[in-house]
Length: 402
Ligand code: AMP
Image 1 (cartoon, rainbow, N blue to C red):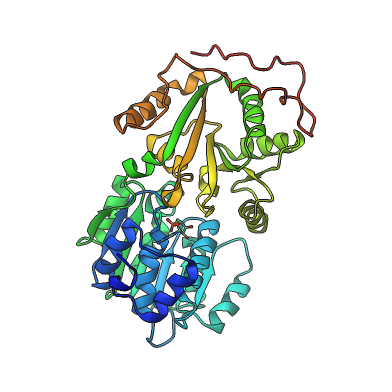
Image 2: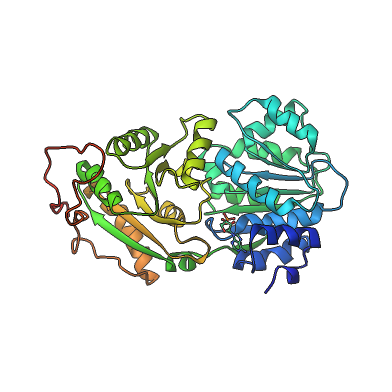
């Protein structure tokens, strides 16, 4: 199947070519004709499937050639995702004469307001800042034709549901709604019932497909040995690695410790300023920092295709989070690796994840209690890193946690 056969207009097809896409991904070939036909859609699944173009291209197609003014609204949970989605859309929109603006907190409102004045057809926004602009009458929803709610379950976790409802209540009745979510907790179902009752549901990048391109490994290690295990592991890696932690405070500390150990690492989390987070993402996507320590929320906006390895330094707190995190590698059909450091107190969730993966025939999942150990030290290279090493602990010993 080709993009041309999906029914997109020529200026949009030129944008697709400029993005370097040759054939549509599964979600794109599935969703684009439906959205072009006017259907409301609920896309269930994680990112990495080409979701942005799946909703972005039909939105641009619908607005292309129409009168200028705000007609498309895309609501996302984080500033990083805001920037990434807008960047992608601008590439697709460059021959369609459509203006894509962003609205997120942490930067001066007047900067965004001036951008709106230069031209605004689509706004990609975080909920709080969108409402601020609306209340100051910097934008008007009067002519909005299409709304996308991206990462709805994340929005719920981040406490944005009341703002989302406020936005929806202020939108014109006549509009097309699209909603994407990794999971459908009951609050999201409630939102769907209230605002998209007749929407069609499509599974995007189903779990089994996504998992089949990723090799999953688990290493049993005592909690206090994790940092050392990670350092050793990263010293053997030559590509980009995304390391997940569960808390902001641990994130910063771990990033600093790795930097002190001479590794090209940095950390990204919600307590950093918008500018610092942006700089951090840029450095990671350009390969200046290869190891990025992130909280799950901050990692949402990282749009880098060639992440070779995802490490769960802290084991995620739910199966869906495991799937979401590991989905950051093996994107767009490439193969990837996920490695989790499992402390004794994380065994319960590990068993849940293991059950899920074994059911889906994913390679190299060791069974609990067997074949486990700290990652082995690289032959002759363990102490050869540039930075200082922590002393006083034996290296290469097998963790006896389980
Ligand atoms: P997304 O799920 O929208 O975050 O997309 C994941 C990655 O796949 C992004 O880097 C996109 O630029 C890329 N991508 C999306 N659609 C295609 C396509 N049809 N062909 C090749 N790459 C794509």
